Image 1 (cartoon, rainbow, N blue to C red):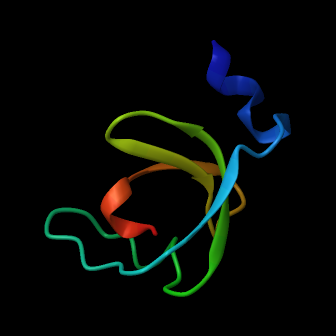
Image 2 (image 1 turned 180 degrees about the vertical axis):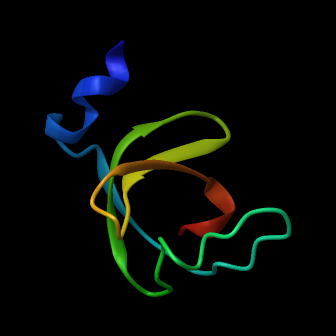
Length: 65
């Protein structure tokens, strides 16, 4: 269960949210456009960041720069 310690892991990099226009999901309540987030893990399709709720969330890379 590697995901249980992501919050305490060192930050890989930081990314800035560029948009929250999602067709299928509501992300505008947990991501803020222009805010910088710490990346804790990354896959080909998703970035896992500490979002506005203070918890780790996985989001499509298209929301970040």
